[in-house]
Length: 136
Image (tube, rainbow, N blue to C red):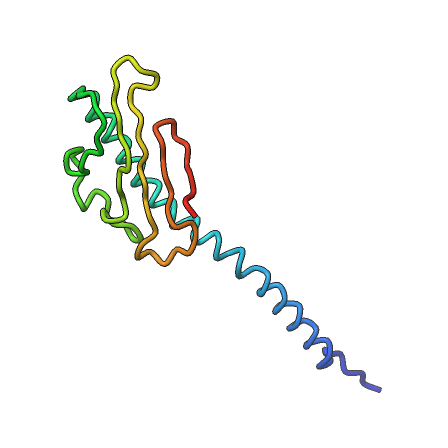
């Protein structure tokens, strides 16, 4: 007598159910990773601006409180144009240079998520020490 060796419909349904549950759990986790990867581009742009600020202060040495324009730092729109972020996403809310102070140069560079399809955070800020602050 021949015996059929095959999966039953119940066994196949259990496998499909398990795969569905795993997919439902993994999707939100992967979405967070995608947003994190997008923010990497924004953080790189902030790093470029910070480098430009340091170079500007080293060259000019002008004391005072000012948020210099990105063009003053030698940055163009193409320097900060990426897949998700453009020059319009970046700003310098505060910048101050005081010779002899500790630290001499203080600044905050902000990158917002306008037009990027990134849900949270709404912005990231970089300070002169290299600390990243998420703006909800």
